[in-house]
Amino acid sequence: MSGPVGPEEKRGIWVISVIGATLRKLRDEAFDASVSSDGSQIVFRDAESRDIWAMGADGQQAHLVIKPEGGYHVFEPSWLPGAQRIIYGRYQEKNGQANFVLESRDLKGADPVILVSDQRFRDYCLAGDGRLLYVLGEPAPNLYDANLWELRFDSATGKPKGKPRKLTDWTGFTFDFPKMTTDFKSLAFLNNQNQSDVYVGELAGDGSELKPARRLTLDDRLDWPGGWSADSKTVFFYSDRTRNFDIYKQGVNERNAEVLVSDAEEKWAPQASPDGKWVVYLSWAKPANDAPITAGTIKRVPISGGPPENVMDIKGHPGIVSGGFIGETVGGFPSFRCPQHAGAPCVLAEGEDKQITFTAFNPEKGRVNEIAKIPAEVDSMNWDLSPDGTRIALTKFDFKTGDIQIIPVAGGSTQTISVKGWTQIGWVAWAGDGKSLFVSCFSSRGTSVVHVSLNGDARPLLKSVWDFTSVYPSPDGHSVALGPVITNANAWIIPKLPDR
Image: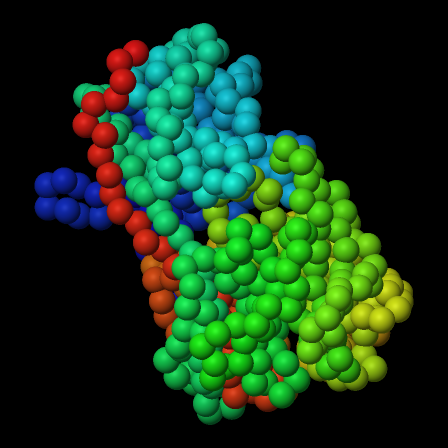
């Protein structure tokens, strides 16, 4: 099992005795562990490098087995029957697509054999000797549904035998974390029905306290905050309540939202321009047949409403077109931020080839100049622009550290702030006065929203079982808009799967 994770806690692998329920740690900085069928070996992921390792059941003789190549990430390692081969998933994100592969290798990390290659792949489990069950998401418009598939394979070589077979054709199910009973007759799984909403909370004590947040958007769809109006009375957000992401605005004391932009394109991240005249947002034409999205547009619309206008072209798409996790529809690269000060440029961040390029742009004239190129693991980074437009805060999700880089827009030395006592930063945002920061920190127990001074002192404002994937403080410093993933999950059992 993995140990508890939170402030100043390490992720690790533990063993628990069924007699007396005593805990014993086997290894620090490791997770995603699986025990071989004979109980002699454990395969796991290293928490720092994310490589796949193996060790004895006593935690000794740990050694590297698989190091991902070509920009891929690995996940969910397990054992094929006989404990002579390891099966695992790997994926690579690019241009709004995830290339998912399920494959096996021998204990030396050699002899790779692909069992499943599908961008709709979600999860898997073994169902006895030579039988694999896996989950595939459904195509649009049912992107958040999934169904169960079966594939036979040779346990000695890992090679597929025959063609995959679809076992279910259900709607409204996700088949998360599928697990077979020990007799391989019944299947247990979670059915997750997730949504996101915009919540607004009142800040006190110079941002060091947060009163209970209240729900602003009352529909049961995906709603993500994007920014505030200059007077801090209105929240701009994007929502798929019409089965397409459109742009909305809603007063903090109002019950209903007003549509700003509704058309056939997918639209994200609305923000007010520095002069307050426009709402600026990201837009992409919808691809045919889940094709890659290689480019999009930054657009603007008058803040009071009207026809949208193009500002400039952008590269790529920050989410996964056919993914089933709603967190893939917020954050990522390309992304942009606009400051509060009129005359200061907005900043665009485009991620490619382990590098983030920051570019200044004007919502009326387009690109101005390149600010900086930063080496980075793009899919684990987040950033924000200070209210005066002079500093970029850049952070990386890390199990061991909670560092924030402060990068001057005009050039100069980069400062590093170490958030004291916290790791796994998923979101970073400047306070309205630019004198402190807000971060969301993940753990196995949920997410904490934390207020951070520029010397790294940290004060938790909110602890929740929800994952808060976005945090937007208001310009006047009195409020914060929050974007949580709200999970409603139930456990299900299929008592008897179809015969082989």
